[in-house]
Amino acid sequence: MKQKIQTLLTQMNHGLVEREEAIKTALLTMLAGENLVLIGPPGTGKSMIARRVAEILETHQDAGYFEYLLTKFSTPEEIFGPLSITELKADRFKRNTEGYLPTVQIAFLDEIFKASSSILNSLLTILNERVFHNGSEPQKVPLLSLISASNELPTGEEELNALYDRFLVRSFVDYVREDNLHKLFEANTAAPSFQKLTQLDLSHIQQAAENVTLSTEIIDAIRSIWAQHKTTFKEDRRENLSDRRLKKIIQLLRVSAATNERQTVDLSDVMLLKNCLWNHFDNAEKVRDIIIKTLQKHSYAVPSNGEIPVVADIAPESPAPRRTENKIKGFVGSGTEHDPILIQTLEEFVDISRPDVGTQGYYFKQTADIDCASLTHWTPMDFKGHYDGDGRKIENLDGTIFSTIQPKSSIINLTVVNLAGNVEGSEILNCNTYINTATDCRISRCDIGLNEATNCQISECDVYVKDSIGCEIVDCIGSVSSAKDESFIGRCFANSSIADDCINSTIYNCAVGHSNQKYKFKRICNILDDSKLENNVAIDSITVNGEKYQGESNPNGQDGKTVAAAMFNQRLFEFTLGWDFENVWEWDEANNQPALRCFSNPETASKPAAAPPNTTGMEDLLLQQIRNNVWL
Image (tube, rainbow, N blue to C red; front, side):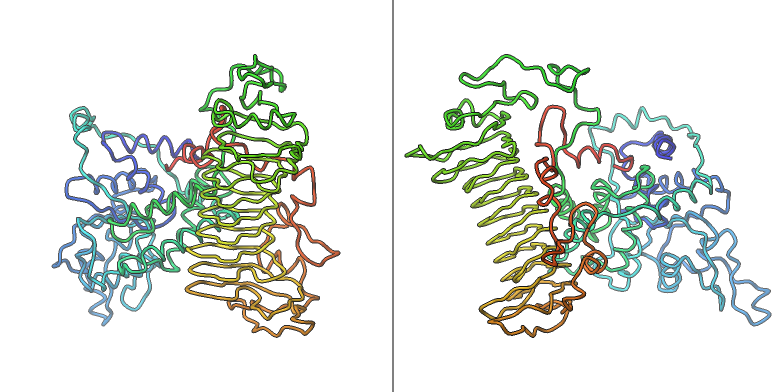
């Protein structure tokens, strides 16, 4: 199916200039059974786009497509059909709809927002329920998609908000850029021939979409985008997100995955929200930024699927790397991914501070524990590169290893008391350590303490964060002192409050287990300010100074829902809170609480959760998925 869609898109773009994105948007919208509004000045080919969508349907006939230009004087008869004289004689109000909008699969209404109230009322049920009330009888409408167009948006006209909200997808179509005007002279205007989408094709796509799943990571990303949108536009009355829009978006993402021949929604599908979450075009760029920044937090480096060349000095017939000539004096290894610089002694470790070594983006691998007890003076180093501790330790160091870890670096498989003063734009994986400040980092499978974390994605960690600023903390054991500025804490477990302070943030699907506290506290979060708590639980055996704590049982309150100790089990976490017990969590029977698999299984824990970024033969997951998505 993916190959057929790619062929159709090529045929539909025949003779058009700078309309690839609008064509893709229109076709996907139709396949998802949704409605599209094209916004832009006259003469930009908006009606041509609608006609080409109609022409690819095998069942398209004269009555299969309806097109009309609305004015403020347009009447219902022009859109829905004239009244039946025969029915009127029998005192029945009924229209002859054959050939009009209620009987077609694809319709195009130009200047949609000039619809009169009499037309508007009928359009609302057609757009949402695919039903036309023909007199006293509801008539099922075969409409796959209504594509509309407008030169302007319905700003300040509240009576049109309901109509506008029923167009899930919005696309701006502008005049051809000046540097592409020459293509209009070259464009072949001959009518193209199209392959056809059959009813069987459409049925196959819908069935495949029903089997598409959304992972917890994708759900977390969408929730984050949703919350950030509401915060960003809370002062802009033009922008709002309805529950109906969310449900329809989920279906759109499933259709995108299915037509890309996938059974799961991936990050690239979520990128399609860029055309679904703005009402006024002035805000389209802000929406796009929210989506991209969120998806980047969920992305990481993966092996290239063919676009990036293979490293030349690796023998393709053998998995073992071939050692190259040393390029850095005093070290073994050339500093590439497959031939890293080996750190075997204290002297070699200290020499990473050399400017020609530690900030050049090299790869390092530690092959033995490093004991720093003999160092009577230590100055933290700047670092840019990729350091694999190989499960080893750096011990007895008085201070942090690195003063700064520069962007696009990675530290994996290392145990050290204090890793860095400041880490930015890097990955910390499978480490046991402490970091003072981390910004725009991906931290996973670590036993870690953080003084301040900003815009970080933290997952599968035993973690304590003093100040979380705009972070996503999911599938973790631990707590946060202060969660603020759109932090998201989900599926986390603690034996005290999940967060002391929760300011403009969200805590969801979290749990608090047994503890004996000295001071009274709220089980989920103590101080709540402009934040959202959702579906959190706490065991009923929590005590304060030996006495049972009587909190208010409310899954959306500061104490969470009270759960009896006998019911505080894997079933609760897996099916009520939605935790993943196949890949992420397991149940600790001895302590009657969840445990992270990555810590209980040393073999799993020793493996990096992701490859380092920007490696030869590696590429960013999000970019790879976007390149492979037929709709992007």
